[in-house]
Amino acid sequence: GDSVTQMEGPVTLSEEAFLTINCTYTATGYPSLFWYVQYPGEGLQLLLKATKADDKGSNKGFEATYRKETTSFHLEKGSVQVSDSAVYFCALNRRQAGTALIFGKGTTLSVSS
Amino acid sequence: AAGVIQSPRHLIKEKRETATLKCYPIPRHDTVYWYQQGPGQDPQFLISFYEKMQSDKGSIPDRFSAQQFSDYHSELNMSSLELGDSALYFCASTILRSPYYEQYFGPGTRLTVT
Image 1 (cartoon, one colour):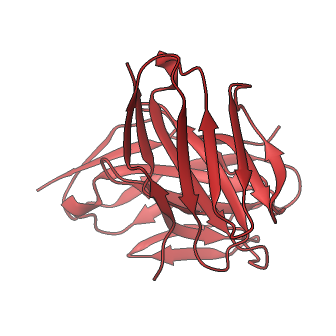
Image 2 (cartoon, rainbow over the protein chains, first blue to last red):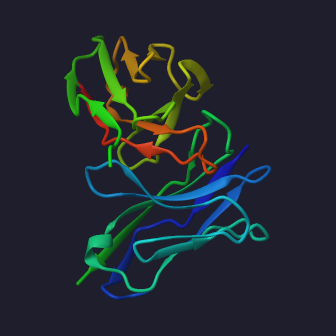
């Protein structure tokens, strides 16, 4: 079945460091790919999305490119801030009405000043 | 912009009691999803509805039921609550015409079963 694998955390960085969180997926066809962020005690916020090969999703300085050949969707940010500390989830869906999002296990990012 | 609304935000119940969680999707969104998230876990899909019909079903216990109403809001009914049902319950919504089928999540209901 479809699945998402993302790097285990926690990831601990200093402010202004470069961030990469790896995400790979297994799916038939062409799923949509997403990154969600969850701040402590809050719900999941859609961070960025991509729907086809070589699509680049971007938002708030974060970027991820849909790589069909490597089945990957790695999240990157050039300079992290303390306020980026959160749990990041990579996810996919099969682009059909009502079908579930399949999440990775989540990666906790902690940024210190 | 309007977001998904969930109520209540917090709920404390005793074992064997029942609970009802409500979800109001973003206006014009026609598809609603329910997820359960345990501490330190990723969200697990429970059930979804499109145009008031059940669309997909995940790991929802038989003790739970859900429905979507004519105004598109949804309710998750949970009976014979167990300690293991303590979790965050999220509702998400999407609009069928979106090419991404991205889901927008509500703030969640934190259910504590004692």
